[in-house]
Length: 369
Ligand code: SIN
Ligand code: CO
Image 1 (cartoon, rainbow, N blue to C red):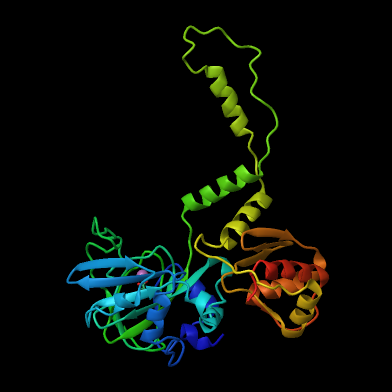
Image 2 (image 1 turned 60 degrees about the vertical axis):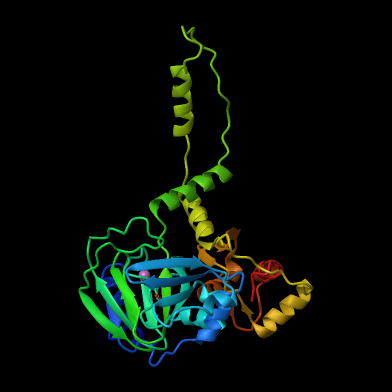
């Protein structure tokens, strides 16, 4: 990683001083970074049926949002100013965008969400708002003026299609040019308005709410918990009203529920599966005429292996999580799997048998590039 990405700061200092705490502006984080797209190319992406895209148009203090996929005609009648188009998960669509994420490898993959790109004409933006996640806003081609405020006043305009802050009093303001970057922690109010036609690349990090974690864990328990026994009431007492719920029944159910136990392995399984589970709109295309296992392994050892950029892979101890599935592995292939989980690709070289088997299954499912 180039040290200039965080200015004068080492990743360690950045984490202790800024991450999840304090904004940071870096001039020329990636010197002269112009991005990967032209206006025509981002519009083309936004009309792709599988791409998550939004078009946001501002009229005075009123913002309207439309969701893709769009038709070419949607971009024909737009005004000259005050609109922006945003495309989520650019890393799924462009290999060079996926490679840009490697630059942020000093943050665990478990926290990474995606790379979003926005294109705005002068005056365009998504309005003053805050996000619930950490984000690096890397300026591509053109100039965007960012205003930020560290405030507790996060009230939103009610009934608006977009989350727009009711009051926004900027505390700092900067013009970001190609290659400049702004890091914002969650809840930091911000507003980015295009000064010239411009592109902004947002590297976003997910931070599920407590409710999401609990829901995920309850799902995990439902799928994995097996409980013996059945309701029994040999001491059933005579009660005056048959329509009333018996207290003993409630007590017995309470005891059954209190007997639910889980351990750290359950937490690991749940978290690993949850964080690598592809989002519902993500699909994989299995190979139409798959190679035989032997042919695949020969080729993989010869050319190396790359994960499909839509694939999520995390690892801890002898557990590997790939696209919501859990695998246990023994000592031999660990080093190879750690390399694959870290870099999402393996250079050419011999594959331990267990790794080759796992990769062949992944290949058949369309999970490799
Ligand atoms: C944008 O690129 O216009 C929006 C990025 C953000 O504010 O999070
Ligand atoms: Co934002």
